[in-house]
Amino acid sequence: MAQIEFPQKGISREEVLATLNSIRTGDGDWKHGRMFSLVYNAGEEVEKLAGEACALFMNENALSPFAFPSLLKMETEVVSMMANLLGGDSETVGFMTSGGSESIMVAVKTARDFSRARRPEIVNPELIMPSSAHPAFNKAAHYLGLKTVVVPTDKSLSADVEAISSAINENTIMLIGSAFSYPHGILDPITDLAEIASRNGLWMHVDACVGGLILPFLSKLGYPIPPFDFQIPGVKSISADIHKYGFTPKGASTILYRNAELRQYQIFAYADFPGGAYATPNVLGSRPGGPIAASWAVMKYLGLEDFMRLTKTTIETTRRLIQGIEAIPELYVLGKPPATVFAFSSDVLNVFALGEKMKSFGWNIDSQHLPPSLHMTVFPIHATIVEPFLADLHSAVTEVAALKPEDIAGEAALYGMIGSMPDRGMARDFAIQYLNDLYRVR
Image 1 (tube, rainbow, N blue to C red):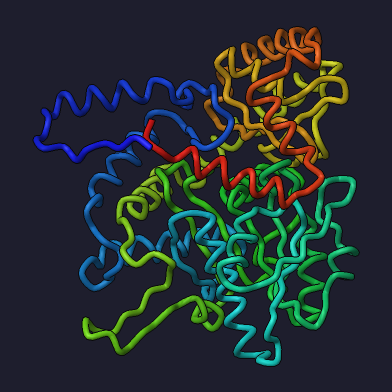
Image 2 (image 1 turned 90 degrees about the vertical axis):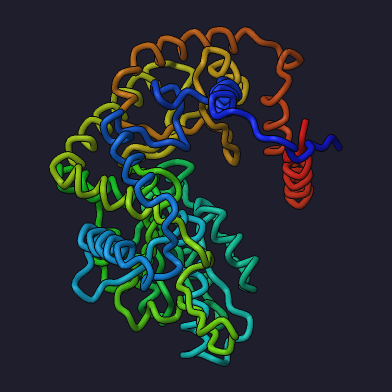
């Protein structure tokens, strides 16, 4: 492998910045709405404010709420505002985390430790999740020593309530539902899942990492969004990202609990460290202050009125995109997504090749498999690109329809191969090797 030597002497500020601007030229163009994942764009004003707030607290460390009471104030206020938005009350508490994966990790840890205290006879705990739930639950279970029971979704791509109920056994401690799922934007039947959890004495977690800051506003706008949050008595915890539809820099998420009695099981404490008693709520010890300040600033700046305005723009844009895609005979949208995330597929085209063709036109659309599809997360900025996107999609469909199977190569062929591997362990090993090889100096 190649190696980069540690620089013997520094270079000028101007040269550093010029190099940074140069190496980013190949990145996805999220600023102009040509990307449908990863970066949530609410416009230059919000971006500028979030950046300024983040920079103000760039060096502060949320590890110590005593040294930086400003971060403690902002974090607790952000959590309280999120709890208010997600059906909580004055008893609802939580913490901020570095992102959805950490929020999910600590939720699983909390449920596990709660179960250890209440049901010590369970030595091999299991959590049950629909196949559409985020892999962060698999990761958390892997790290924390739980078994995941993955249940296929029903025909609508929603969590299969009867199948999940049937999967419960003496080792089950936790049920998962998504509000909404990332791959297809489907809102699971949280009320039904929570009722099953309550009846069986199980922890019910709602993953609202994507939907937590869009579904409440859609409901307030009059869209038919079923209950999914703390309004449902059986829900014990909710993960909800702010760096998605809260439009703040990465990484900012929240993990919320119905009350402090539940939240205490998230906290790790060690009293015998020579450096002093050590207690942290999160996986991280040192935590950047910037994302906390940016979250507080953007929520205060936009308020309910502007969040609803942005949501209205986003849902109307989503509907325009869905209508335009479904007007193309070769394409269809998967399921009935109620919000601003969806996926589309084809029974006659190679959708991975279609995604590659759109990429050649300058559009970044993520490929998905099981089933093969292309993912769309819609942001307010996309209101400006609906017509050119659909025009390019029409052209891409025509070009891909003319391809022969032997013409399909590169990433499209690779993704199709991984999705079709009957041995999923082999697919997993391939993904590990691919990533292990990707992160090296070239």
